[in-house]
Image 1 (cartoon, each protein chain N blue to C red):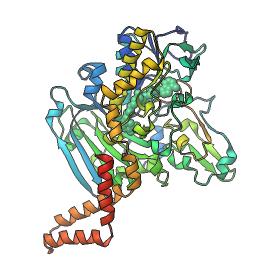
Image 2: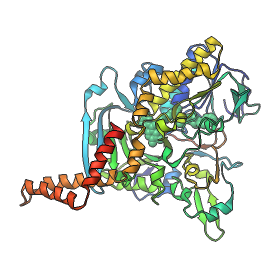
Image 3: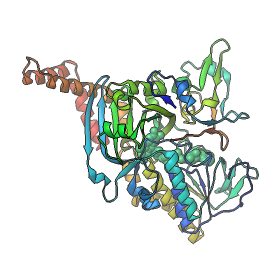
Length: 439
Length: 100
Ligand SMILES: Cc1cc2nc3c(=O)[nH]c(=O)nc-3n(C[C@H](O)[C@H](O)[C@H](O)COP(=O)(O)OP(=O)(O)OC[C@H]3O[C@@H](n4cnc5c(N)ncnc54)[C@H](O)[C@@H]3O)c2cc1C
């Protein structure tokens, strides 16, 4: 149904705003419990507005969508994960590969959001939720200080429910309008661009040494973002490669390199170029990633309202985990909505259980708390992604070069170079502050 | 589809993106043009992944090609004067990715 088509019932048990993983997970769980559930999605269908790398983690997803890997439109099962540190023309590579990741319950899959979001939405509909596409929620309606429904762009577009679950994603306009979150700052979001590069299945499998359903991921640090705080990624799909790069806005504004140019430079990097050679450009896209984490959590709940997923900043950027926290937070908000309906109490007194669940039943809060000082650390040590990559690469190159110098002399030269540049105090501080902030 | 070639410009990339353009409404509104004139950095221009913002030198105005917008939201955050009245396009309009 779209904004221009027919009327919908004016009253539901639960309204969900946004059909991303967080909203759809919430709607699925509510509908399964028999609650009359409606989801509004501004896109033509679920998924068309959404972008991720993306690696989807099986276990958290299965908590809502069961054995989805048996019939969902997945790309490849990730059996190899790599972290590369790039300098301008070289790479230090570290990776882990094991077939174990594909056995029993596979650990993770690469996905394309337009396909997977549609699949999740079908599960919600099968459970009995009503999904209304092409409909933007313009306002959360309030009565006596509690959320009571939403106003949409449809004619006669007001719909009421005692509970509204906001799953609107990173640009949290509704959450802000309810004063549950303040304006995002430059430190609170990373700007990303991504391109789909189409390649034959056999070429991908040859280049990355993969079997038919197997996939590999590469995260790239250092020169991939020109030393700015961010990462680049390359993930294998069935017949394409997802290549993207993201930088914290606070760092990006210091430089004139546009997101598009950064992606272009990544594609030209001598270590990356051969992996995508001969491909065809399939799509170019952009999206923000919430980076505020624990320090920037909104009010997660209020009277008649809960905020889930990216809208609540529930992303662990360091481990590229977002969809899992989105799904789990959706599930926990739904369980809280079910409890509220059983009690007939929709006030914050009941809905605060949502936060408790996130603390106790999911790794979400603990993980976010663990990394709450990570961004601050990087801001205090802006050279982390430029100085160390270059130093490490130079040292390795030197040790590997066979020339008249003895290995001992080479080692000593590296140490002397570090001392001469006056880096020792800085390195000690990096180590102490890094230990405090990240471990 | 076009052959992947590192020299392709942004226009080639945007050509691949599917949009449903809302001819009646612009969803990115500059609140006060004078503020943009005074703004030295104009970070909206460089931070936009789709070159939506362009400074027209002779007219001294910021041109907004909202039809190219990928709806990321960066411009709203980077504007030092909170001078962009930002919203998503109306339901059903705007970018519609094929892969995502
Ligand atoms: C480049 C990139 C790479 C990533 N890689 C990974 C990865 O590898 N693994 C991982 O787990 N996570 C990854 N993430 C993060 C992950 O994509 C998000 O955490 C996740 O999508 C959050 O889900 P959500 O449902 O909260 O929000 P979204 O997926 O953003 O969904 C929000 C939905 O709400 C709709 N909407 C918004 N406002 C309204 C409104 N007013 N009315 C109606 N509908 C509305 C939108 O159209 C959208 O469909 C990545 C993100 C990016 C940008």
